[in-house]
Length: 274
Length: 257
Image (tube, rainbow over all chains, first blue to last red; front, side):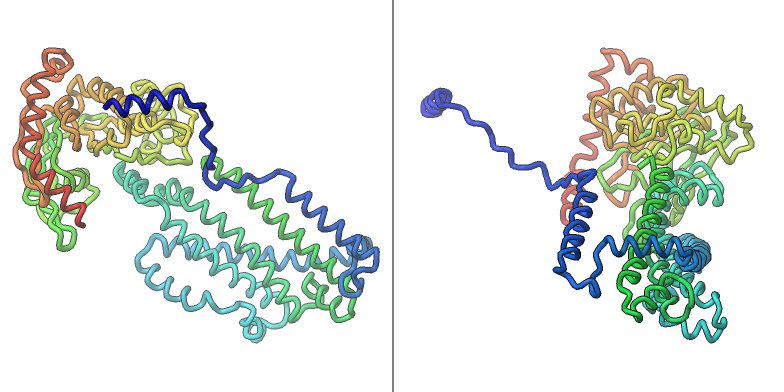
């Protein structure tokens, strides 16, 4: 007892020192302009490398050459010709695939029969690279727009169906039980509980399907199309016009970014409650 | 309207959860269900409220609910079960949307329910912006909006801190004071059971059987008085002595599971 009192008294006379801050968990904060600054820096370095002859422009043209190529494409009207062909295929294919995917996803999420049948088929067909079906679809649907649109729709359909039924499965069961405890009809439960509850997963699925659609449209256009960004990129590559080729790649990247922004805006509007 | 548990037995696969449980909740009566962990209290409430099919036996109703009751048996959930994408008033209005009521009638019911739970100023707030206690108030408000004959409350205070529990307990006492609404109150908290209930159904360890039905020997109004505290404490001790050994066994069973 006395020893302890003596120790405490001695301790009180010692100089204090701060407790070292050891961290608050790994919480990386994102900088608002960091990404843009890094991008600008990479482009600037790339430009310098191109201008000084450090990199052969045949293999990697400078950003200014790519910008010039995009400008010329825009002025000549070729940009719109290729872009509109791709946008039409993506738009129609994505909408068809999404509509079917949402319907089938909800059916699998809500019906025991649809689940047992649907999951088996989806598991079997989802892993098939959809572009491999393009020749078959050409045989079935002809050489026009239909097989390209069908390829995109198929790719979008499976990813959408999976994200929708996963989203339906993720809706907390207690909310459905709550609605049932108030005798809320099935259709109202689907509309007011399951749909909004599954929406985060559905929108996350849209991000994936937008990329899938972009990937498939480029692939399909490379295989058999006269117009479209994919066809344009392939043609430019065959002619060693790397500035044109990279102009096509940049346009694809900008398109992907724009779609991402639209989905981000949708998430902000529809999921503001999160 | 009376709610009757008639020989309710329930099993989850091989696990016997409830065994021949029978009791009656009379109109306006508050009955607490207490017992050791895992004795089937919440399962019993789900069965009583029609959210779970019992293996045998059945919940039954006798008599008619009040004419204005839109959902005679109404749950108040332990986890609040609020729609996170809906505001407070949208949550309260949710169970009214499928009824035949006009928008004005719905609005009036929502207003009344919000006022009774002191949520009027929070009508446009989302659940994530509210404290646990306020969220449960929204759950209570939603239940009141449908004018229930019997509230089915599944440990409604167990997710809350002690001060919030006390405040909400005062609300429950006030809401149930006039005897116009009955309640089945599932709890592991014997103090809550003694303060709120007219009778306490004490269940045994799993499979839950009725061990004893304890009548609280004073009116609800009397329980707020200082003199009643000793009696209530004695009652809690009496119930605790009934379930203490089984609670210890139940705890060990859970730990070994």
